[in-house]
Length: 180
Image 1 (cartoon, helix red, strand yellow):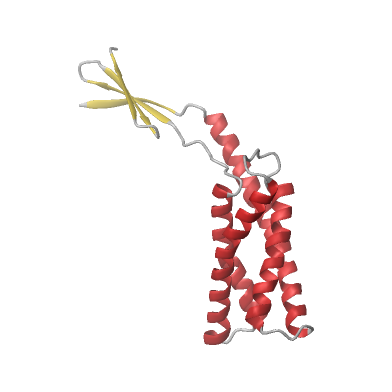
Image 2: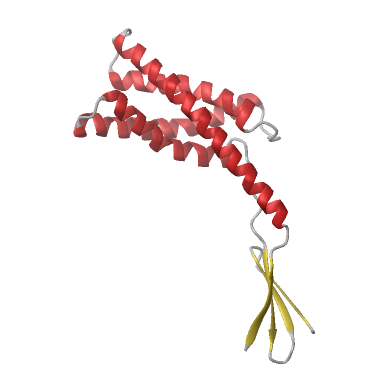
């Protein structure tokens, strides 16, 4: 029988710092996204009402304008200080590719909400953008800027009845045994 004697989380300060940085980046990404909603909505409105384009075609074009402006803002502000091995044009292309997945999500949600539910296209567009934002953040965080948070490394020390101490490192699956 083993008795839990001590639980230690090495690098706790580093983990907290990573979490704080991650939350700050998510907040910045959301602010950029909010600016992008304004860019998208104004562009969509202009293309539909002044350009007399089909709403779905106009939405696709407005989304591409937003993708480029959001990339620039995210690259300059949200992920400032992240040293990517990708060049600026490579990051732009990768961001655009990820965002095209978001575009597909946006168009699908926009079509469902306008054609099936009957929502006004600008309201439906806001809902569609919110839905695609989750995809865009997660995938860009990992692929475009390649930000990797260190896994939490918890060490649990136990003693069995004979007094032998063992430590299990959760996160890297190491197991250490020793006398004690």
